[in-house]
Amino acid sequence: MIKIAITGAPCSGKTEFIRWVNNSSSDFIVLPEIASITKSTGLKFKTEIERTQFQKVVFGLQKDFEKQIADVTICEEQIVTLCDRGTVDAVAYCQDSFIRENNIDVIYEAASYDMVIFFKLPENERVYDELCKENIYRDEDYVTSKHLEQRLLSLWGYHKNLVTIPFMKNAVEKYELAHDALLEFLEKHRRLY
Image (cartoon, rainbow, N blue to C red; front, side, top):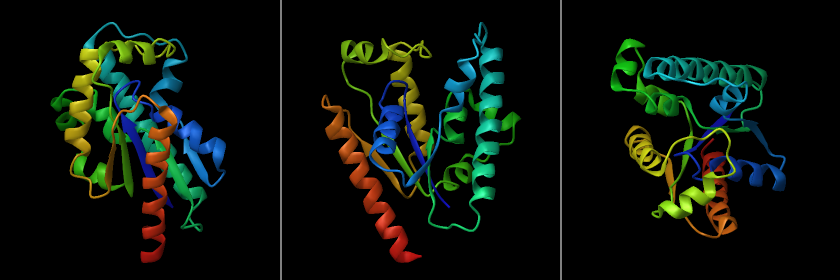
């Protein structure tokens, strides 16, 4: 199985990209964003301890779902799974103590993905607010999201197949750029294996 993490800060376009790809092709298995699924139950977090505990749950569920997909597709090496976020993302939402206390090897986690597509935020807060107004599961303000973007980039940044997609006002152009990078990677990967 080929496993690809689609990542970025809140409201960067990753989920919309996955929907866009899925609507144009049935060649992918899609693992939706675990945090959004969990938040859709109505969970709210009042303290940093609750948020950290939530990310620990998200981390575990992400690993479990990825393993289940891998187990089901074990005989199909060319199956491509698009993960709306990866295990590294759960770590990015927490303090470094989370990594130590839970004995997480971030390099190992990142390397478990064959490719990472990272969507960048706009440089304009007004544009960000416009993008986020429809997302009921997001409560991060622009400053918090920019901080998360930097943290995510620092954790994913050393991945050998990281592709960073700049923010573009035209979402279709942005998705096409990411899709082209995805197809180029898959072509190269299939030639090697």
